Image (cartoon, rainbow, N blue to C red; front, top):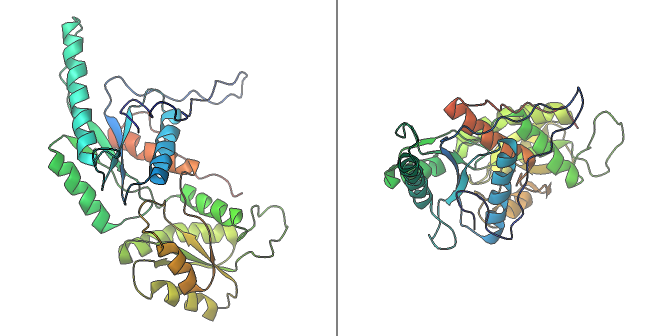
Length: 307
């Protein structure tokens, strides 16, 4: 189980990359300022060992991009035993900040009293889900602690890249447009599956346009939690000439109820790629939301070139 300072003993820790020598070396990543608020990853869904592993990998990626980052994981439906709730993690962050301030005073250091949020809460969501965001916002308010809540991670070009990779891993898309090889099972139409109703579908459509540009095939978004949405979009794609469809989950994973993705693929009558999971871009976008909120060491991830 994670703590505010790192994963539990025995879990792998993603370390910052060593500085490369030479004139063309990459710039050193900025370090988190002393006393900066903790990054708290708000994880939706029913907790499990797999979800915890995914969340810890996302946090590990964020730490590797910003050395010194204090980060923790709070589960929206946690049990405060194996899976700490979001409220408990925020209370710990507040207590830890106060403790450090008091220790600094006791050591005779000249320090200012803590101001601003003790934590920045980043939802582990690719797209807007008003119901889940309401729950996260309520959990932050109920904790009684000073914390900032960021927006969700998308839309963003890096998410289009991640979708492309997941489709290619499943053999449903070419991995590289530059090399003109074909994949026998490559789809000629993509159903972009999201959760959160019409608002989520509209937001997913923006990333869908970026994915369509990468794959040169039509991409249309649908909500797996709206009855008939997947089937309607699949029928629309087939009606416009697509013969071989694929389902691309615009979802990280924890927000997806068990069996929902399989049911959606069956409804669309096609194969499905895996959810985005702990793809590196997810950790970078989590950190980007954190730094943008605080106005520190902006780490705006750029959309990578097409694969």
